[in-house]
Length: 435
Ligand code: PMP
Image 1 (tube, helix red, strand yellow):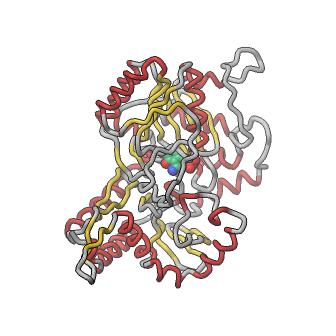
Image 2: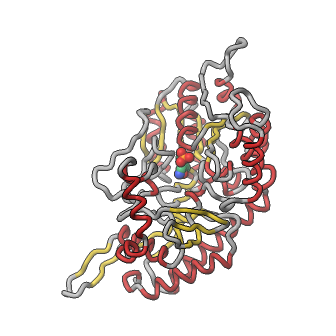
Image 3: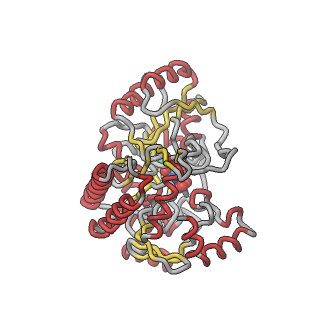
């Protein structure tokens, strides 16, 4: 499959080769890199992408969940144009940020107050520093498989599809305590061992990057009660999962944190975005102190109140991301995942799909393949993923290389049916995927 890919993507290869002279790997994001070279994208329109060699793909990656409303959504385009017309780098307080903050506080019942930043990573790092200052403690419980940005990644190499040996993370030097996910006894033990210095329990409600593993509700409830019992802060990273409803995934689970972080799609995918918010007594520590008082924690950033971001996110919340859209997107995800799992069962295949709502990941059970000389070859799940990825590309479907699927609101069930047909053809043609 990779051989076909090389032959049909000469411009991607040449573009990547040239870029690699000045950028390590030819890109500034490791996650989008892949072997033998990455597809170089040229354009996005509606639910489709076109690459520099002219191939058109149904986009099921959707900028790793940030492009949730499709490419060049008319309201988002208009908002960006409006912002550009009004001057986009004002350099002081602007009239947009307060209005946007109120929209978030109205939607997320656990957000008394909120602050903006430029990405999910930055948001999480800033909120953790704030939580440490608030509690006066340093230990942060996180979970194996968790991903909170490039500076806080606890995923295994294989789940992140980083096969290169010796990969190191760039994690911030916090006092991390890493605990198995969905394991209440292990969590209880970690909390009791670290109780005196425990600042927070920090988790994704569904681990997205490491393969779309939802948290068990009783595990999230245990996080809540253990955090309260230890006088620690419960912090949900909803950068990816907040899309499950307009009030976040926390509102579906009915378990509420002290702090929440958001990011990705709120500025339409066209602008960077990050936000964190929660209890007033925590967030108020960021109160600027120039006119007396002040909370004592300094949070600043040139682009935190960037006009194009503020205006675009306001349009998203006021005009695009409605309760109806959120329900429809969630149901479409349930429909697609059920169809994929039905297909896998019907074709007796080793494929299975995990996730919740409109986020999901394709996995394969390990398998042994008979080869010509009669011996057996162990095909690792990772190799099967690679085969699936390249085959889908050939059939006109663009997935995240780690096979995470992130649905867009504008992608129709008819379009998704073309993906289901492609998967069906693939499973019928490839013996190695059969049980
Ligand atoms: N937290 C989670 C749960 C994420 O999925 C991501 C990005 N995939 C981040 C944080 C980091 O966000 P960003 O890439 O905007 O820094």
